[in-house]
Length: 385
Ligand code: SF4
Ligand code: SF4
Image 1 (cartoon, rainbow, N blue to C red):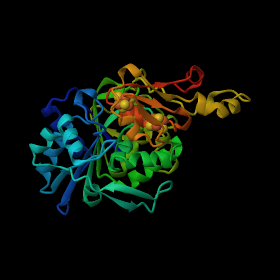
Image 2: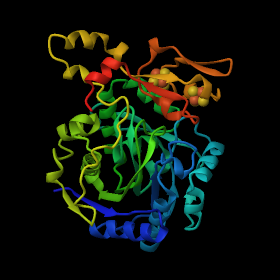
Image 3: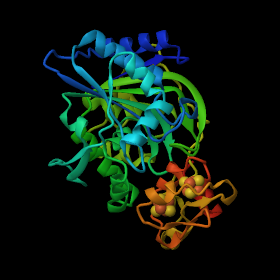
Image 4: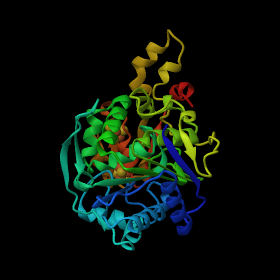
């Protein structure tokens, strides 16, 4: 039976976080073998922003993990991630400073990875995607610590352990994967293939302050007061449990539904062994979901009307809409658009929706939160809420 540890962690107080990380790993029987020479810490650094935006893993959790590894191993420790958009040493230096990683890592002699090198790698067990390009330190590590943030996500509904590993793919190669796998189902399958390739040794979830609404970058902070963890392949059960925490069933998250189908994950939380003082949680029923939730809304419409709605799907489906007055013309949306359907005209972004594949990368990467997710009223009426 998979095992997931949940601990009430009410704040980012460093002592409390240090204690929570140790309790998780002790409860899970996690050990770092002496043969491990290099460990990579992979937080969620989706964009250059401060921890207060709740889009990135909090530095207190990263510092606690750095301390834990230092106390239990003499391995070299590297912190690495790739946000969306351009991936360069200069950009990474800015991201590490803004997100608090620099301070968290330096105290423990942890290297911040700025070389920005990646390599192609085959995923022979991949069911949807068999070839990836992955950050070199992740490929070379003996052990990966996956440190994610609990968030909603406009494309995948849930962003937690599995989705966090998409950051192992460097910057502008991420939109290529969106373009290769534009349908939500196939994209979810690709994420599972990627998780099976990276195989993190342990996954920890920062859900002290989570993100609700239009995540993963433009939602709102929601205090949950919890951290969670699982080792190895229990990452899927961990996502199942965190989904349950915010009142999402596996059927509402394609990634989880497919993990269940592939036999990676139990169907219900009842089949997961929960430990820690947060194990008795109740689902947060008013946790706000993204406007995109329920993209498969045609299933909710009585026959014989559902086929008409399916035909109209692309027109009715939620789409990105620029709030022109808030757009600063930075071009980050155009840079990250896999369909190359955004232009910057007279200092403002303009989307040609006829080519849009509804991946919401533009929404995710906009530093000014100037892109709304616009849902058709018919869609809203029938979407699964
Ligand atoms: S919409 Fe956002 S990302 Fe795009 S140009 Fe405007 S401010 Fe930049
Ligand atoms: S316009 Fe936005 S949602 Fe549409 S394809 Fe481009 S990045 Fe994706």
